[in-house]
Image (tube, rainbow, N blue to C red; front, side):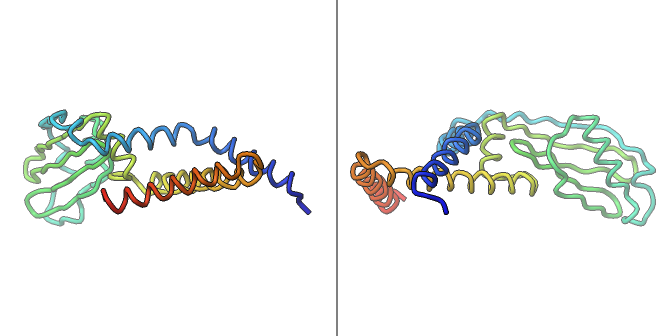
Length: 196
């Protein structure tokens, strides 16, 4: 059976090494929390480009809209124009294909003429801060990144709880530590009620 001293050692070990393991993630989410709070920092920093070209007519030929070679078209556009992000829309009508890409800090959308194979895309890059903000929010990311955010959040919860539990094993600092925790909690609640 685990003794008090052994349990305290485990709590301290978990707190220390999880803190070190998640240091970069914690710093990233703290910094992007500030940049998200100041959207004016990323205003007027967008770079908009018109992308033009042609795709192979065999990829879009014929009247059957289900025969459009989606993967070949997407691969071609990504290779030709260094398009970032995931394909979020691909629609085919008798006369054209419409498509859109979205990624952190990036969007591209446009049309392909099915008779000529010519296309026009509007690509917008919002910069590194906007990309980091989108990563913070999980916007325009895949399910893998959203899972990573959940794991990081769970680690931060464990770090917070183990830090709180550790105060109960510090006899001399326990009372002051608990008062500071109570004061911090009340301050946070008041800020939520008054400023939220």
